[in-house]
Length: 274
Length: 325
Image (tube, rainbow over all chains, first blue to last red; front, side):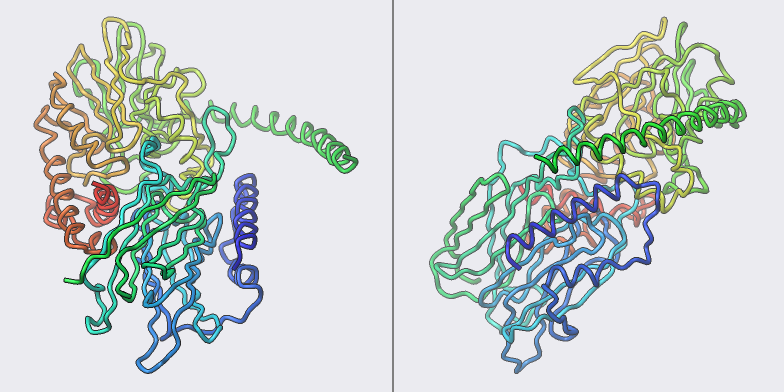
């Protein structure tokens, strides 16, 4: 999915959210499943095959903290299957802008964990594009969190001084995976409010503009490992943990661009496996 | 340009229609208000306890907000001076707010001059409309922002558990905000208000009745009800140390029974310290968030009510914050 398409989807999402907000007295019919329309718009009408056994999505059955819901996407191809994942798209159907992110992936990136906002009870879809050029879909259902939990920032003052600060961490080997497959895991964290743009400024009563990390790329040496095309459902301080195949490069590099055009960069030496 | 003008005409003509609709709504609202005023007089007074001379509290149920408990889960109270009354939090529904108003009127007919909100959570502010527009609403300097950002979300989210009780709930922001400290005089009764750094939430405000020594701590203090983290775990632990310096005789926590001060801080301090040290250990060992949320803080399980409703959420928030240390 290209950038303009994602932006269109984001804008449609915003418009729908505002319209729904305006007509709040009319209860939304929960029976209206947005997925068929979403699937067609997001994937250009391409067919979505059943991804069971090939790809998987892991999310808690109930969102504990509405602002920080962990989600893991995996390629789970059977032994002997020579296909590899090329991209994962995460769609949170009932969120104001449903497309949380699209990740294009490089060698060994068969697992991606991140954190998202979940506004209400919703289906969540993961669509993997494999090297055969086809799309494979799996889904799960998440109950919204209860109590006073909200998908907005806990500390509205945030850490403005450190916007764009990056952390990179390398782990010995993937959790819950076969140690023999040679893969490792790493994690990138970026300080950023990732404002959804759906919040009102209490003084001006205008909607706070969308302010999010929209593009994040991570390289191992010169090899692009991961590119995230991010939407507004990604939590504050975007945090991505992923598997990869070490290629012997001496360093990792990351570059992020937010919606105000700020560019954030980082570089870290590759650590030997334990 | 032509289409702009056309659009403006369209907008204007729909304004004309809107105006007529608005007049109709105002008429309906006036009739509605008359009915409300009537039912307000009929509201059953909330059961309140005089915890000290001039200080009254309704102790909320240790539960989640539901239609059955009318959202009455937080401790709400009021202080009576020689000249006026101040309300501290209004409850989880306008119905509860109205019952609190009835309880006040049962005790005194002095004017209700101030309504103080200890933070932005629904169980503390959803009753505000029962006291609007006459009282001066007071809150933390961050409270308007928190209510603006979260109010519409809460109104949607709580419909599932509260149903029609939400119909009359309105987000009523403070008209007077506290940046650090403020003193209110109710007539030979002085209230000291203090705004805190992000701790339980990012709009925590405490109210000390300096005359009686009663501290209304809002959700900076939890007893029996597991603490709920919606601000900053590091900020809350620092705040607990600062709170100890307040010279109060007793505390009304946001949830749980009245207790001695500052001994009441010990249980939640223990919980938050355990949670923080578990999270730091899990982060260090590289355990991912989803797995960490299931184990951090578990050693405290037997000490708290509603533990299963909030602990994984607290762990999630604490882990994400401490990951940046």
